[in-house]
Length: 202
Image 1 (spheres, rainbow, N blue to C red):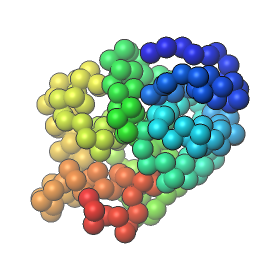
Image 2 (image 1 turned 60 degrees about the vertical axis):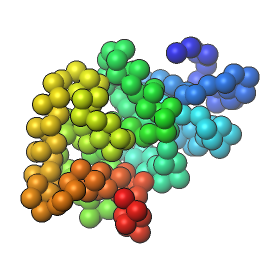
Image 3 (image 1 turned 45 degrees about the horizontal axis):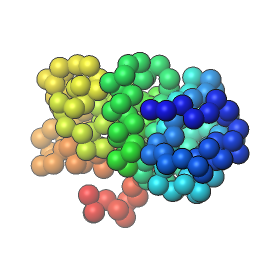
Image 4 (image 1 turned 45 degrees about the vertical axis):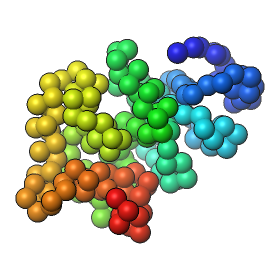
């Protein structure tokens, strides 16, 4: 991890990115500004292979619609998280590796807002707790239970119990032969990365 600039100006960031070979860009800010997502779109257009991580202190619900549109257009290599959720080196390392590998990671609070404002067919996901959404988020990115446990600093059995609770809440415990895949499908639809037409590909 290398700090390349303390300047949040988009032109300064693009100038630095033009002369280095970066895998992931980590942007931290006190609050998500109205033009932040649009600026991130510009960076993604100019550097399509660059992973992007946004760490913010606070955000407004009205920003969620814009973030959903960004998610639809960019189904790979980005993360949007509240700063306090990345509180140790292990989490930061796993996050950067995940984004570099092409995954998408969302803060549970952001996920809840996307569910509230998204497709009514996925609205029942709001019955999941923050921790359950967090585990579901990592699961959909291809992480095994033991890896998720390491990231969250909990025992693997805790992750397994949470997953069983998720399946039960989504009525998949006994009605689905592939609850893990079906839960992941619902999650991806909720954040705008999977349409109904794409479901058959899962």
